[in-house]
Length: 380
Image 1 (cartoon, one colour):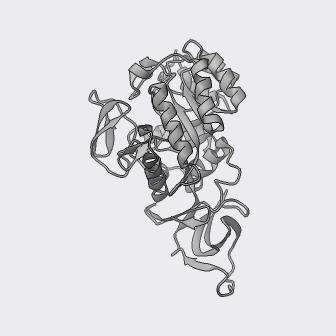
Image 2 (cartoon, one colour; image 1 turned 30 degrees about the vertical axis):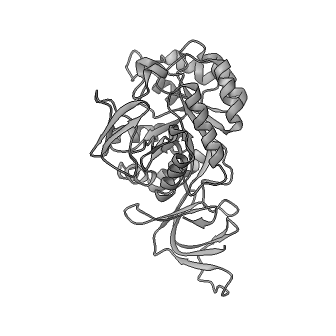
Image 3 (cartoon, one colour; image 1 turned 90 degrees about the horizontal axis):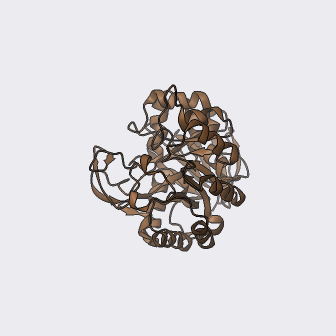
């Protein structure tokens, strides 16, 4: 199907065009122009954007569930529900993200992802993010301690035998025994190596970043905090230009001043918006099971019985709005939601509104609510 999107504001790489037309054909962006052109009847379906904002499809590198479904259920339906929920919130690609579990439960989750790829009802699966199980119990957050263990290359080989190149990101605690060996293993696989749920010192983190780690999962959460005599993972990451940071921008996990600090130090090219959403995303308050824990969501905030934050319920379009509300320029916030995650994952035809790129697009109203989402040139 071919479309021309008319009367839209367009978020390009470095500016917002206040009024433009975007031409779509065979799932690709053909051109962007600002002319009032005569369009031959029957060649293109016209879509009036109502003057709303058109942004590149957002990419969530860290999401666990949605609509009451947890991707660790190991069912195709759970994966599809997340795909659908992502699309409805302006996300066009995502990494199916695990939590620490038994090996068999993880392998079953991987199998369910493999069965869904190519048949997604909404957002496309860009790969798998393994959050654990090689995490430090001291900084476990909501991760279930009974499943946490030291890095095991034999086990990791079994995981890769099942998942192959689908593994795009792995979050680990590098200070654990075998952590540095695991980094070397993952670097050879071309995987994005992330640090979190870690009690690594500044020196340990610097060694990990020098050896191949290049990302920090939900920065500031689930890691040794900054102290002026013990700077930890966060300051080590701030100093390394090649290290990018995830941010859960939901008015809960990070103070607005911290979001602005991260942006000042890393810029939009080094910062990624994520949801880290559990199955309560799209449903709201209530009681849930997540990662083997009872989780209560109250006023949109998910917590364990002891008060520990347990992922989030934020959506990508909400994260984009909250980021702008902290004072981050809109064009930078869009990069953090779309362009930067695409670059980190090597998705060369996604993340920007550019001729020749995939027609993954989202139309947002003045309150950042999703009018519609387009995935590969098809509106969902």
